[in-house]
Length: 54
Image (cartoon, one colour):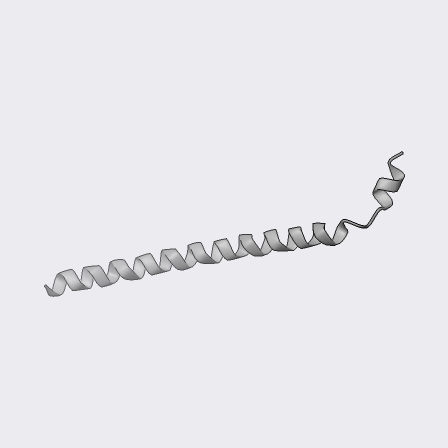
């Protein structure tokens, strides 16, 4: 009963695409979070330096 379902390969490219897309999105999210944190730290340093000058 289930053998034809397990042998059917018609949906496998869509499944592979979904897995690759999810991995890429997770990696991009991690990179954006790290970049945002570094940017925030840099802006804090600029704000501190500006406050010391004025």
